[in-house]
Structure formats: structure tokens, C-alpha cells
Amino acid sequence: MIKDLLIPYVNAESEGAPVAAAIAIAQTFEAHVAMLVTVDVPAPMPSDWGAMAYDIYARLHEEARRRAEGRADALRARFANAEVPVEVRIAEAVSVYPQNTAAMHARHADLTVLPTMPRDGVENMLVHDCFHDVLRHSGRPVLAVPAGNLSTMPPRRAVIAWKPTREAARAVADAMPLLRMADAVDVLVVDPVVGEAGHGSEPGADIAAHLARHGLKVDVVTRPRMNFSVAYALLDHARNVGADLLVAGGYGHSRLREAMLGGTTRELLQTAHLPVLFAH
Image (cartoon, rainbow, N blue to C red; front, side):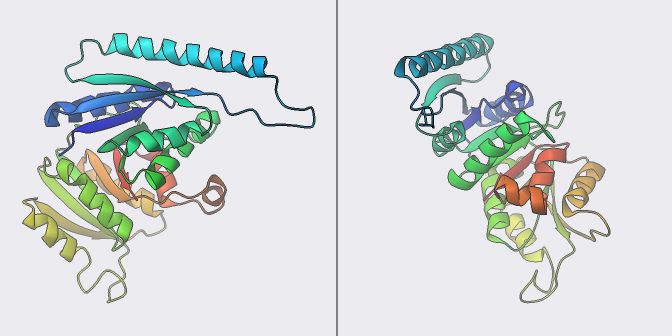
């Protein structure tokens, strides 16, 4: 069951598709939605010019709190007549970064909902950092919802990006409340390695049997990546079958490592046309 959803305010997109998806899920499960607005003023650091004067720092903090309270008041007014309980909370992020605060609050929720990541700019870093910390440090799944999302939530059709890994198994378990609502679930295996050290003798069969025992209607689909990325193969299949949700194991690396090596998680976060539930 899903009873608590968290939406950290990262950018303006946080108020759009992530809110709509969270409220739709909350209506189905009679759940509670919390939006988190942080007061973000990094602790003053000494420099060659000396420490920041206390009155200057106090003024910066007061301005940041005023902005946060204004945003929180606007959100409370917007959700005053929402069909589900929507709480807007303010949290200080003085001694830690805002994404650390978001991860702490996410530990007390069943699911954190975030916008997907723009390809560049400051907002790219903001979304990436929040996604990375919540995914890696909260112990909870993250639902990334693209702007303009039209997918039904809970999903009518879902696709599981299956690999025989800890992260993929965690994602399947965390997504189970949503998967149970779907009419059909595809277990998609891309370029499987057959054998004891890989996907087994029948790639995808074991996890499909496990899901079937939970009452899910499951099909196993195996497809080659060909000359495309794994993320492209996953999203292409999801688009072809009209899926409303993709479930995937998530790997949160540092921005430097992701920039150098790329990665399926990063590509999904940037290019997904449907909500993606990640777990680590």
C-alpha cells in the first residue's frame, strides 16, 4: 500500500506533472501528499577576505525564509480544496544541502515524486542532485514524472526493465502496489546473457513467475539493443505498447562520473516520455 507521498519542491516543474501524478495515486490509495519547501541558505564559509558578517548572513537567511514562506502559502492556497490531504511543509537547510533534507523527509514516505531532468542548465543540476540523494540515501523509491505527462496513474500497463540485480529486484518490490493496479505488465529483458552467471536459462521467466503468483498478468519480452542505448530500447518498447509506467533499478552516480560515462539511469531521467519508478 501507498499511504504517504512526498514532493520536494525543486523547480517550477515540481508543481505540475509530479503533483498531478501524486494526487492521482493518493486518490486510489486514500493516501497523504506532502510538498516540501526548503529554506536554503548554505552555512557561511571563511575565505581570504575573512568570515561573512553575521548581520549579512542573517539578512540572507531572512530573505530565503520569506521566499520559502511565500511559495508555501501559494501552494497551500492552491491545494486548499484538493480531493486528497495535501500538506505543505517548510524545512530549514542551513547546515546541510536541500537534497539532504529531501532525503531525510523521504525516509518517512512510501514514494517520492520528482520532475524529470532537463538536459542542461542550473535546473539540471538541481533535479539531478535531489534525485541522486533521495534515491541513494532515503531507502525509498523515486517516481520521476516528465512535464506534460499524459500517462494514467495508477498505470493500466507497466513495463519492468528487468536485470538480475539487487536494484531491479528492489524496484519490482517497491512498485508492487502500482503494478497490482495494472491490467498488463511486460517484463522487458534487453540483450540478456543466458547462463548461470547471467539471466539464467530462461531470461525473465523467474521474475515473471514471481509476479504471476502475486496475481499480475505478465508477459516476458526479450529484445536486442542493436545499435541503440538500453534506455532507448526500454522507452521504445514502452511507447509501442502504450505503457503508463516504467519500473527500473536506479544507479545514482556522481555528476562527473555520469557526464563521463553516461548511464541508463541518467538517460531515462532526461528522455523518458512516461513516469519512471526508480529504486536503489
